[in-house]
Image 1 (cartoon, one colour):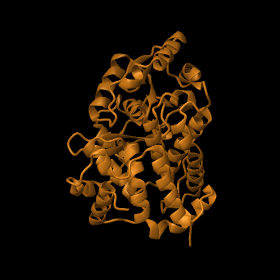
Image 2 (cartoon, one colour):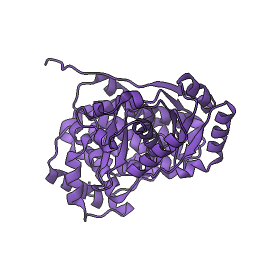
Image 3 (cartoon, helix red, strand yellow):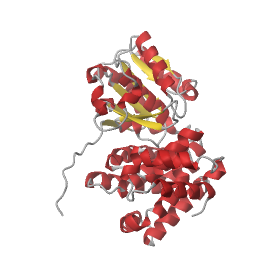
Image 4 (cartoon, helix red, strand yellow):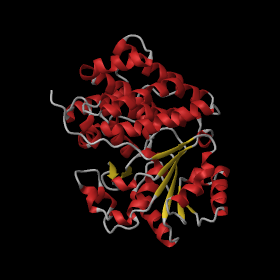
Length: 386
């Protein structure tokens, strides 16, 4: 077999360690940011942790202001209002702080404040990203408070379309944050249920990247080690939220998943994206529920690869052993068995299937499912038929 031509990209500067949020002002200054807009969600904005970070940044001489109108599943108005705040405050950079929603909205504000087109004109399709004026994109410092999306090392953000309710991936290489601060102390206050759900998001990224059919051995290696870190640390972090070692390893595993999924994602995300958009459900939780159903549906294409992964992870029984581990992990950390358990029904499966087959993640699935197959698979995810 002749190896294909491929472009390999790996992420930004990562500052890892407990207490490293104290370096925020230093990293802003080093990247030419004197008036950062601090973008986060309403829950975090009211916390003493954030108030201290903002106060410390002001003491360092930076003109920082907070924007917190960010929904759990971001919509276009979150970005447009953030852009207005960016311009009104004469900001010159963004500190994106929080879970995936805060990070994505922060990155998209930095992207859109200088553009004259809609954010949806920059969807991750072909070369649409070239429509943006790259010289007008503000620098970004990213600080995750969950170990899930890995958006702090990514070049995209997700926003729900107001009319179709589809989750759209907005891409531009220049929205890769200049610095990502991975401070496990910032994740200690995350409740167990959210720790579990975001951790399953990180696992989905690593797992789907490992199974993607494209040639990218660097990403494959990263995703494999990312899965090992999750296997060894997710349940620990859920069980004892103050375990800084477990929290730190999960932050790294999350960044690894987002680094690796440039190789591709798959049907887990192709199904969870439309369901999240239609039902406004938590993305990581959806991934955790959908995961074993998709894994089983892909079996004929991924069985050998999953057996290799199982061996590396110390799991006996090849593919079957790996699947049993996924199911046992879900049970241990409180992830529901089926989508019906979180109030999702079968009434909109036609819409889910139609959106799934068009989702960018579908192209990375080892099997190119038809719309009919996506509907049948989504139904199993709802009813719990494994």
